Image (cartoon, rainbow, N blue to C red; front, side, top):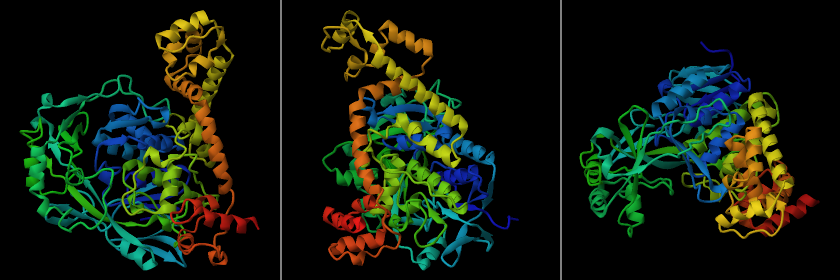
Length: 623
């Protein structure tokens, strides 16, 4: 029925599991993906969208590494927006509205075409170990499947409980049963577990809505795409999204259900995502606000189903319905299904190494919501890293990790394993101290060659990246070397309210001014001739402009990163005895013994470890 032994078994086929299985298989590992329902591979359980603030950067990074999320997003997009375009490029974040059903279908199609990847539909109910090492899994039918490594990506299914008002029932997602057995095994092995909560809004019938009463939310006039590969498609037409608002009437109706709300009556004891609160939490927490935005998003090209972004709730279905009827455009609304909250088990991520391998069991990896994160993108990024490292471990190769100055993925994993989390962790640009370096436009420059080096990113990806880099570097040199008369420059500068120049100058200087754009520069014949003559595409033009305009900021951030990276080079032995350091504070001693940082730099980021503690550590390491 199964081979004698797999290299990698991935449990769960959500966004983390799909990326983990694909990465391991593409690297050459004999891989098995086990899930409770093969019809729901990479299911968009919540909003039908990929990307967003900081999340879009993560999808670009997954793509640069050779993952599938960006490709699938491009192939199934129904709307594209580059968010934060009014701010600096470090804040630009791509986002697509996706066709939910085609997204899952495309993922499955790509995975079925991936060599070395097998599939099996059943619930994994336990783990097999020998002498502190994972050796396989056990299914609910009692089947034991042997493996050299296992990646757990169980999402919200571990002992999941769904809440709608005062009703509770087991489930990992609407219409699907919860997963049992794994949590109990892990606790017996000595792992620390906890509970978290997330929620989702009602889905409604678009035919029952009056969109004329809502505000249209179109996509970008010139949509871009996620994948750096030239072969993925760019949108030529897009579906509209819409926006409406709640009101005091809506809020008062929702408050009528607070006595039965699991959020307020004690039924839900776990923490939910602070930055994506339910509508009842918003009303309670922001009592001074008389309205909140609701985004009305289509679930696909042809479906009539709509997602009500901003109305996540666990209130009773009758309260949800009555309140939503009072929203402009929803007077005759019909429900496909009500919103609900779900509680599930997670495991404190400080129990993991940078590779996402557990410290307690060799060869066992965690990725996704099991680590306390929320969001498809956060899960997928952990999945690809766990899949890569499971393959490398099996083949006795060096692990693959990313530093905080190399990727948002590096920031996310470092935050998790160093600080842990007591609420669902979501990525934000503010979490990255080197966000000027970690832009969405340069993820391929940062990561593709690294991934190619371990065998995941294809030669096509590498050559595409190298060509883009060569063209942008050459164009930058053109601006540095080309001199233009002030008579040509000044009309352009003055039209933008910028101070004129008094003599001939290199193009680089006026272009570096914040209010002068590439379009302005292309009004100069020599620049436009260069672009057309070299057939430069939008990515190269954007990269050139960013590199010229933000050169000073980029160089400063690189210098800061280099200083801190010196601490990354100071390794701490794996079983280092911190009790030797008599001058350490008691809190630092406890935190360092628990987290077991790999480097002094990581130790410096642990909450409760002071600069004085780091000085003590540095003195000892210096000896």
